Image (cartoon, rainbow, N blue to C red; front, side):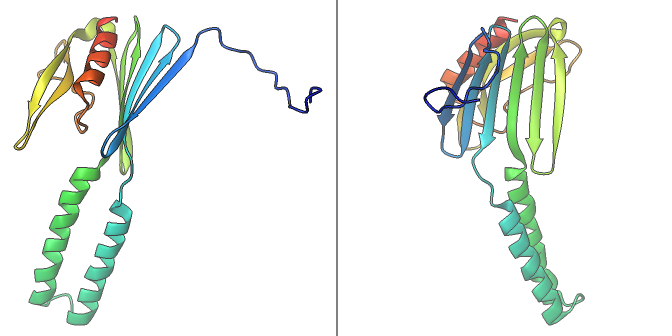
Length: 182
């Protein structure tokens, strides 16, 4: 159906509750904040691009040519193949997580989603099980970065929603305030 201006009209109900989306780009990932009315908030961190398939195919091709040239039982073949496999394992460990998100359902609980290079995991934590949300400093060999964590009843360890991303302090405070509202 078209109106007098030539634009097509679509019959859909407009949601009275507003949806707010904010996207921030960082060095190697993108952080998105989405509010669905007054009941749900979603925070997502996703990597921009991964070159793992290209590197993997190039490595397999190199290993195959080494085996065809020298043979499987040649010492020089394995001397070249083992470092390539070690590089794959280090690279895979770095790129294995593609996206992590936390959905906060006010009054119900928190849903944690992690999308890996090969698979996905999802867990839900009820509001009654959440003791507190904290912002703490994660220390690695080279840097100190702030992280958000959840203290859960009957859990021995801290639940860290964005463990593979370096979320800035400003975004961690926004997530912390949203978690405090449940």
